[in-house]
Image (cartoon, rainbow, N blue to C red; front, side, top):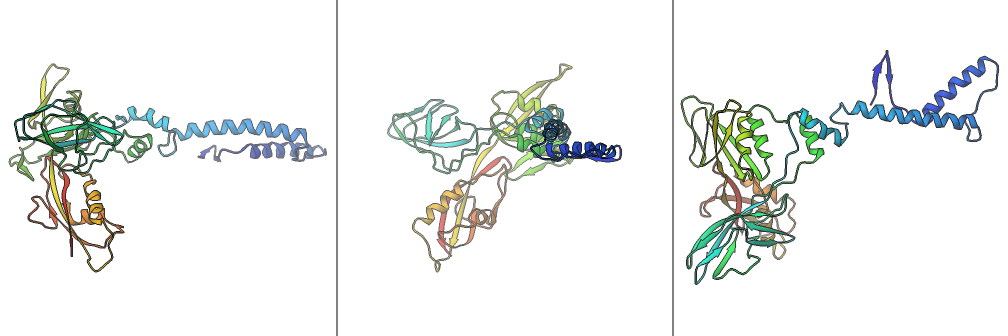
Length: 385
């Protein structure tokens, strides 16, 4: 980087350029006195000395340039980015664990699945977050969380067995794809966020960003009803009263306090929901912050292929794996285009269309997901078009 000083532009130079400048100055003095000039050759001791001085000058230039760059978000070091995060009122967004919802079916007898029961998945494991007890032939649902931080993608039916024997168990599997976690934010990602000005602020976006950074939280949606009289009705019938916020989180705040503190430190609108945390202000006033935990909502997909074009064996299975591996946000609308985009470049059949459904019966070009739900692709039907 260069900058202007005293009417001239300063630019860092190499050792050779510094040596050339010294040589030019010395030869000018020698010429003025009628003396022989110095040649820039390795055999000349004076030239070698000038190169040594030039190398020292280059080191100083590099240090000065780095100091200048430390004031530029695009050019500073990763360590400087980490130094700047607290000044910008933010920090690295922590990672989150992938979550799945399991369907457990009992056989000819009662089934008890303790909390913390392991389900192996490749090189990682999932652990049930609570226990579940079922009577004979009973069916129930229980959540499980990956033991490894990061974006572990689990398609529908990706988990099909516990790591230990469960007496009388008929089956266990996840009906829809898991809620994919995330890796801890890198310095490069934080750099881009700072450049774009996406730091935690005292507004609705700032609240959502802050809540998304809570360890254990995978995704967040914060709805605010700006109306002073009428309710805001989200898809699925979720009500947000006038001048209230509705917080929907995927995952869980293991601290038990950070949802409340991160929310009330930035915004103080009343909240609603099935769960709550408390926060105490310096005045001693205690406020409750209500929120809901996102549920999963199955989306059925129907994919059409051109029967007159070549296909490869097993292409239907590949389509299902691709679609069930997709991840979506809370309340995200799913459309035919969503499905088609995921299959762009598919080489094993010619895809000509798609439709989606919430019940597996009535299909259309778009489905609206409930405001408190994370969509996941369930059954995929591949038919000729």
